[in-house]
Image 1 (cartoon, rainbow, N blue to C red):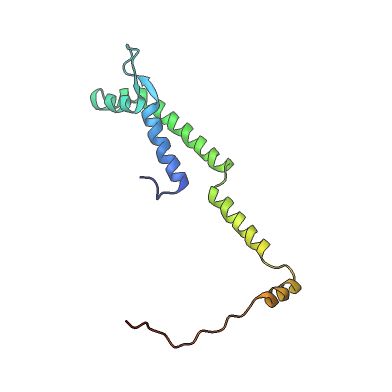
Image 2 (image 1 turned 135 degrees about the horizontal axis):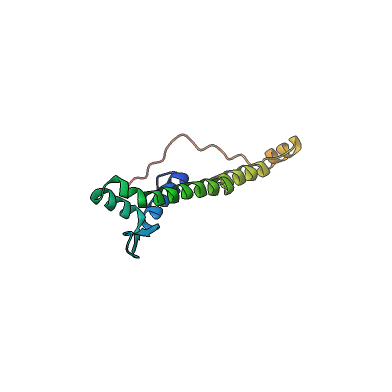
Length: 126
């Protein structure tokens, strides 16, 4: 589903979903049951009003902010795999290129010229 997106956007969307689903919070003030904080905030907003939704909403907001900071740090520390590949390709191409004019002339002498094929096409007959 996220295959066509950029690497950063993939990580961001996956992080948002992970934080929303796996950040626990208490269902009620008097109970010890835990549920995903995003769902608790949504349920509290629908049933009790916006004031009680802040009880679990601030936990989700802090977790999302922490995830975003960690994701930015990860992308700053670790370079893109595409950058490594393009760098190695250019280095490989530079190694293949002859360095001096003498090497270029030697390379030209080694190549064989192929005779040009006749412009007439031969079509098979049955």
